[in-house]
Length: 153
Image 1 (cartoon, one colour):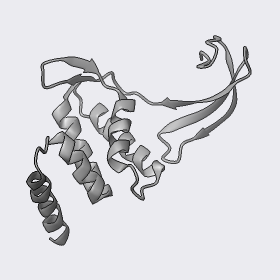
Image 2 (spheres, one colour):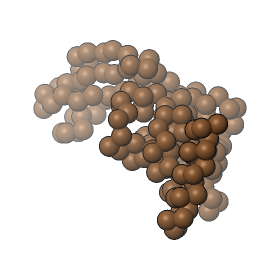
Image 3 (cartoon, rainbow, N blue to C red):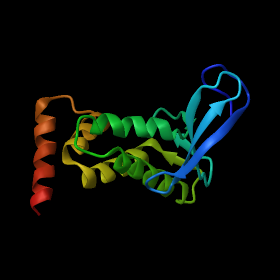
Image 4 (cartoon, rainbow, N blue to C red):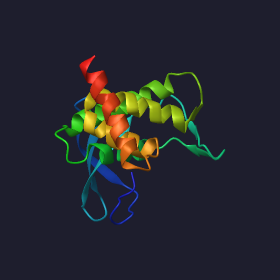
């Protein structure tokens, strides 16, 4: 593994342990060139996924991009990072086991909405405001009203 600090090709694993959700192995490494320490994660990847964007573009699925989107929606909410990781891992696993090598960005967005709805209503509304492109305050109001009604029913 290449050192992110000096670019040296070799590093030594100092510690390995599973993540809280068991979906990855966390490894602490030390560079043999500059002695800096860094962490890597090893995850199972069942297949290479291609995301079909709305503009007919294709790009490789990027787990970190998905994690960033969910993290932005959950920022400053009382949600443990392990629950966010579990949500993202669950979405990735569902995408990989669907049997298709290509998935639409709309399908990914719906899976995120589904996961956030169960996790935190504020994060759900935040994500929906970007995903569904709310343009006016009444869009927020109407959507929040739907969320509130669903919570009662």
